[in-house]
Length: 398
Image 1 (tube, rainbow, N blue to C red):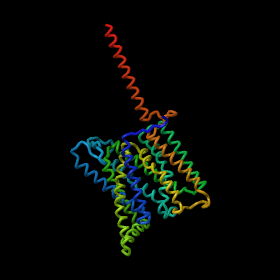
Image 2 (cartoon, helix red, strand yellow):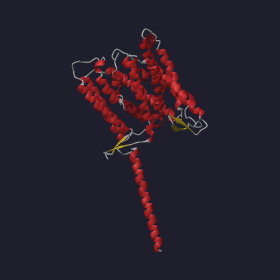
Image 3 (cartoon, helix red, strand yellow):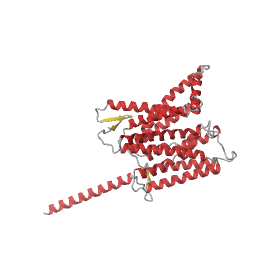
């Protein structure tokens, strides 16, 4: 078989991450399109960070209550308990500074990812998910290079093959959009900033988990506190303050009871959005700890073709500055969608979710290693059996 599915038990947390990510975006869509009928950028960021603290505290308190047991649980799955007796190679000051840096990368990435919805280029549109989906696979390239230098992770043939194909697809998408659709330099710069911040966040946390044995729930709470404080200061500026006051004024208007009821439902869904955000961030950290930042990049890019398709079908609702509005965009959409599927597939090859048994791409993959080890064990067992049979024959001859 040319392609094999490389199922592993470590895919549990990436699967949870994808699930919470999808539910979170689904709630955001209903909030902004059907209930509140307005874009929420800074408010959603603030709610996300607040619920990071809340969800982290809930899991931490729940685990401490079960501290007498050998194992703890996350979503009903038993986990190995953190060993507090392990000595950290780094000082507490260095650990705190790294957490602060990670927090700032998280908030810078979060704000830059939402800038497209509030600036003049994308104001009043749903361009963020579409354009970030087009170039999100760049994160796996950045993450692999950063981990190569930070952790000395080796890049094998299937890794290099995947990264080269992803890079070619990204170049094709950018050139196609310039030729057929829009001048998206500003979008690409913002997405690149967001991707770099996300990768640095994952890499720093990976280092803290593996080298300094930092507890996942504690780092979630610590980063949530820092990001919440910084985000609160943003509401002194006009953009975030106007967004907050507009939501409050529409809620307490009182002229239309049915409209007020819808807004209160919207507020309830904001809390649900925050809960899913907190669970998503914990699942992300477990994905980074158990797997790698590249696995997190794959998990988040799985939904990209859906956002690209949705963005194309809703182009009339988006305000896009075209070079030539009469030029067809069908060619750009088809090429982008095909490249998106190819990039997701190559990300699966990189993370050995799919293994190609051709051109030596299967070498150094976990399936190849398991297959080689099983064949080696069978050969050794056959040798032992043949040796035992020969020895018994010699004894019978004696």
